[in-house]
Image (cartoon, rainbow, N blue to C red; front, top):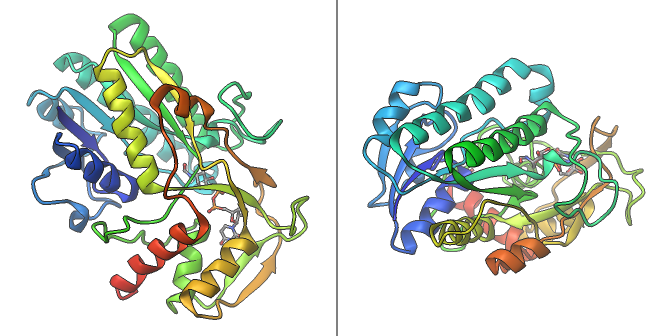
Length: 324
Ligand code: WQD
């Protein structure tokens, strides 16, 4: 299929573009390179440098004729979204509306959309399945949920069929080293730990050690980005084969604490990785772990690369390769 991957130069987008190209799809990346890296593009992938805030650029791109769109372009820092909601509304909401309208205009009716576990907010039960209440605790999660609601209407009114993929905590790097770009100024746990290991940061701040978890630190469901990429390819295949629109969680179903990540990173990197306990970060739930049963049933998806060592080792190799 001829696929437009919007945000395809980013961390997750470049892994998705890699997986799709490996399956024989013809990939064009649409990216403004604001956070994505041109070095992440792979031979044979065309690049249209453009911004989702530019409807004319999107119309011109869509006019080239694509069978499907993968949309991963979004601002994703939950904390920042609470301080700058306008920036998130403009980029995540208006930007996606621009994409949907350009798709409708061009007659492209298959979309795989990068959603997030942030749509759920504080878990009422665990593991979190797709029937869990959606009460986002931050504006970022709200934008993802609102986009899902618009998608349901575009399906009903315009026949745009979609897969909304609710990622839990994306982590890891391509085991063959084919994605090289590191996130700049990361806020997520694993890249921060890697920067300390690489000597780019003095120490890790642990946001609270008094949670009701096995060791007091926050527990999350880390899912390898290559597993996420596979799910995008399987969702695309399902939609291309006529599947109705679908919404699924993508998580490893395995919860890991901050201290467990820290211990594995010290063991694998062979560095001390100094850490100190700080106050809790507002809005952080103690534990967030997925049920991915629906993705298994509908897509046949399995998270095969999401073990602790695989996630830490592949990330550490990416930091060593970059000479971080
Ligand atoms: C993980 C754990 C922190 C940094 C966020 C977004 C979510 C999604 C994934 C896009 C928590 C602890 C972290 C640090 C720490 N993004 N931590 N020190 O908050 O689970 O999810 O990224 O879809 O929408 O909210 O990820 O990596 O920030 O935190 O102790 O320097 O690590 O408290 O327990 P989070 P995270």
